[in-house]
Each structure stands twice: as C-alpha cells, then as structure tokens.
Length: 574
Image: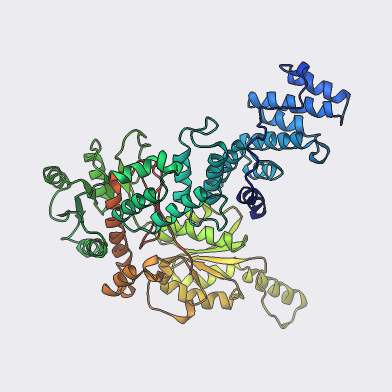
C-alpha cells in the first residue's frame, strides 16, 4: 500500500478527535421513509429516473446499504459507482466512502479500502476499527494499533461499539509493531505506546513483570489497567520455571551440542535478574530419547528445550504429544503441526536456524530498496536451492536464474544469464556474413536492477570477478549470512548481507558472546546464537499461548511466534 494513503488516514486522528457524533454505516439520514425496506433493484431503478438529484443519491445509498447487509460487495460498488463525492452532501459523502471501504474489504482489496477511507471528513469509532483491520491485513501493525486505540478513545471504555477483546487486539498489534508514532492524540494513546516500548526493550520476563507493575501504578485509570489484555494478566502471574536442556554432548555431533550449550549458559549468566531458573542438562548422545523423557518427568522440569537433531526432535515430539509442558524443539519438524487448540495454554514450539528465514528477510530488503528485475545466483547445494525457492515464494516479480553445479561453472552461468553469450554469437554470425574479422565489444543486458546471491564465502569471492567480466559489476548484490561466514575480504564490502544480530548489534551482551567464543572464526557461530536465544525464549514459554503475539530482538534475528508454534527470524541487511 502506498505510504501516502496510510499517512492521510493516520494523521487526522492524531490531531482531531471531534467526531464522536458522526453517523455510521447504518444511519442514512438522507434516506426517505418510503424507501426503507424496498428491494435494492427497485431503489436503483427509481434513482435512474432522477439522476444527480439529492433523492437519487439517497436511493443509491439505501440500495448499497441493503446490499451490504447481504454481503453482496460487488453490488455495493455498482450501486455507488455513479456517485461523485464532490456532488454529495457531507453526510452522504462520508456514507459513500464508508460503504466503498467495507465493500473493498469484503472483496479483499485492502488498498482500495484504505483509499476509500482516506476520503472521510469525519471519523467514527467504527471507521478506526475498520482501518485497524485493514492495516493488520497489510501487516502495518503500528497503523493497526493506532486504529484500535483511537476507536476506544472515541467510543469510551466499555462501549458496546467496541469488540469485547479490543484490548487484546490492541496489544497484539502493539507487540508486533517495530516503531511507534511521534504525535499522540491523548495521554492514554501515549501510555499504550510507552508500555509497548518499555516491554519490548526488556530482555527477560522478570523485568517485564516489574515494568508492567510500575506502569499500572503510574496509569491507574488507563483502560488497559482497568481491563488488561490477557497476555499482560499472564505476565503478572509469572513464576520462574525450571528448564531441561536436551543436547548431543557426546558422539559425532558433540561439537554442535557443546556450542549450543555454551550459548545457552552464556545467556543464563548474562540475565540481569535476581532469581534464575534451575537448569537440568541431558545428553542425547549417550542416552535414548525415551529414557531422557522419563527422567524429565521424574525431575518435574517445567520447560524442555531440545532436542537439536531432526530425528530426535521428531521422536521427542511424538513421545511428548500429550504433555502440557512447554517444549521448545531446536529444529523444525518435516511436517506441519496441527493447529494448536486455542484453549490450551501449552503446546509444542519450534526454533531453529533455517535459511528460509534469511531468504524471506532478503526478499523484503530487496523490495524495500525498490528493485523489481533481479538475477538470482545459486549453487546446487541443498541450502542454496532451499533459499532460492523460499525467496521466489515472496518475490512478486519475474526473476532470472544463474544456477551452477560447482565453482568452475559459476562464470559460465553468470554469462548465460547476462546474455553475453548471445552477444558473442551475434558477433560470430556477422563475421561469417561479412567474411572478415571485425572489432567487437560484447554487450550484456541492461534490464536488471540487482543480483541476489545464495552463495558461500568462497563462491562469493569468485562471483565478483564473474560479474565484472560479464559487465554486471555495477549491479547491487544482496546475499545471506552464508556469504559472510569465512575469511574477511574487501571484495565483499559492497555486498548487502542479511546478518545475524550477534555480529552487527551494539548490544553489550551480544558483543560479549561474540568475543568470548570468537564467533568470527568458528563454524558453529549460528549454534552459539541459537543457544543464547533458546535460553531467553525458554523463560517466556510458560506465559505463551498458541495465539500469543510474541516478538524478541535476539542474537539470531528478530524472533516472532507464528500461530503454528514456529518461531521465525527476521534479519536486517547491513
């Protein structure tokens, strides 16, 4: 959605709140008594008899409103099509805009729905609820949160105009928003965002609990204090859990398990809280998963983290299927889990280092940079193929491919994609036609905006001269953290790379983790970050639910919880 429409919608309710008495979609003040309950087709036929009259406008609005009642959204738009906002009275113009917005929402064209709302001169609580839902559909959570807040401010606490779970919806949007407004319409508006900023900055549940208690003391009459969101009620009842950590600490995967364990313990030691969880560590390398699960039950552990290896994770998920203990697998299951029962507090969660998360983040960064026509360079390595596949799922434009089997064929693949070989073929054809040699400068295609490379560090250093040789060295190159894992090279300085926060964040704790374990020079850097995040997430699990809107700025990326229990990662580009 173009930002100009969002701005035109958001700004009015940040500077004026004088529309409490505005009419809603069900109030047609210009509708004549004799047309109430009439068939909409008859109303439209009557409107056609006296076009452009005030009565004709009222007839069309009445017909559109009846179609709205039947959710006949296209008929609503057709009934309103002849109406021009500039020719209507102010109440009629606002009514037309509301009906059009509702119709476009019903047809799932959220952009046109927002555009219709932008024409309103007066706003009601229902209008703000509608814009909040539209912004949610666009994942513009800042806009959605403001919409819910303004609706509640206009309607008043406890109003029947508001959904019963208005505060839960407000907090869900606030939890997902990454930034807040700079202009506030009311002290309650500012208080909502102040709470969001404080809790998002907290790195532990214990700190959040204290901040929530302090906020309630400061704002005793705030609606969120009088009727708190369910997520914050659970926060008030939080107790420190004991944690069981299942990892391969012996055997062929011990190095990976030890790295993850050390990251976990580092986060434990860095946690700035008075009381910390009791941690039980179980070795999956020496003991069968079923036996370890029995030990977990005997030890009465509150939260289980692990296993790490996919086969063990699959087996553990099956063994513990009927348990109500929060469990965090450190890998992703092959099959999708069934949707959790929303009435169940505890479920099975999954957190891992998936290349798909980085590919999705990369697609968002390339889109935000304004590029459309991209060349995707990938190898035949499993991770590279998966990354390219995931990227294309989130890429709305056509793309070109340069696939190579090994580093020796990289230059050839780039040349074919850049169509330099076509230029060389034309040169040969012209020489054959003329029967003599001619001077020739190969030409590459000029229609590409950027290169997206899913390549290793070694392959990336070979890609740079390949792009230069084929006249593509002026194109910006985007890559994942796999490209950065290896010897530092000035050749890669121009790359835009989605990188793990542990390598780029100025957070003191993450810098300590990076330097303590020399993450720049270990092949297990992602596992240290995963272990660090696993500890932090494990302390939150007792208060999470399947529908929780949970986000966390972490070592492996910005984490957010999906409804299927999977944590996904969002990475920034350097």
